[in-house]
Length: 157
Image (cartoon, rainbow, N blue to C red; front, top):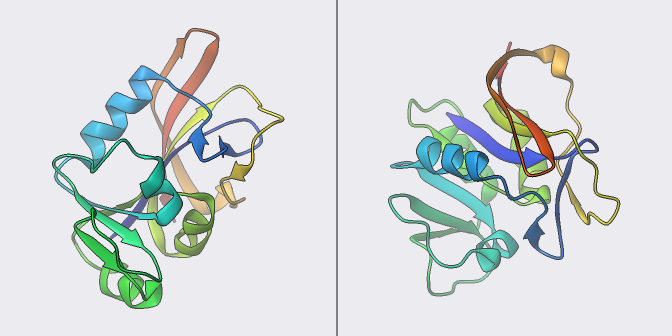
């Protein structure tokens, strides 16, 4: 099963200059707990933005080239999707924008931290999706510093 996890702003902002826009401790804690012990897949730019390999997860990077660091490199995204879209094993897509766009049609669950703030300087965005095609469950609401957020689970109908 393919799941997506992300924090997005009012206009689906994800990041700018290859960094996250929103830094919410509760969102980071949710991310760690939700992805712990699972495979996570990301694009090469997301991998480069990390401080290192994320512990207790199988770090998989989509890239045309082989390089050192991740647990695995995927050269054929369609083959990966075919292997996991109907699997009982939950695999988390963690970014970036292009990778979310590629996986969105196959993801059964979206875990989105929706932040009630916009960033006009954002350079990376989460893809638009039709929320009426999903059941919505609010996991948690909160605020931190000047950011009001909701952690929401969307399950495809």
